[in-house]
Image (cartoon, rainbow, N blue to C red; front, side, top):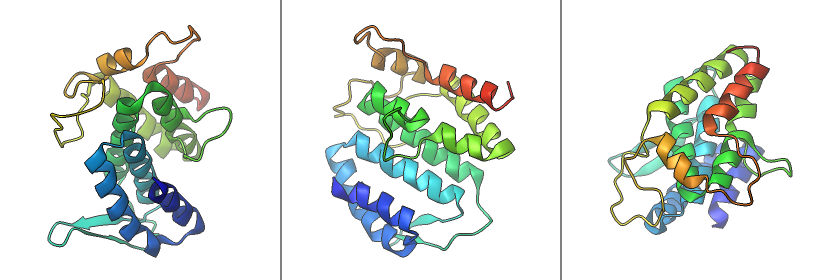
Length: 193
């Protein structure tokens, strides 16, 4: 879905005013057809925007999304909600996207992964990583909108650790780091445990 990529481009170009209508259309299509990979990308981008102080607020009365200009004020709880949803949607798609959303990949990625972004943000980023790690250990595969007809092989409502175990099939036998292991390695790299 080209809209998802276009949103990332507009974000990179600083054309925040162009994002809301694209976001509405992209989200409608992604939800309708359960494009979990696109939903992961959208939520990740929304998390980055929120962390930069750019809000993409939905007005429930007219279902419009508006973007405000960057500000030094932002709500970390909004950022974490977007990052959590990005991780869940990525998990629902496959383990490769989950790892890409969280840590990136050696060949590069169009996504701005969570861990490197947190490492750039010092103490605030460390707190974000700790919160995400703790949530992953106790949270469930739930984004707040039940989907009884899901196409994902990961059942809704189960513990995230169990969902990740299901998603991390043996594959070719190459080593795979769990979400918790990846975050703990990042915290160690940042000098915090």
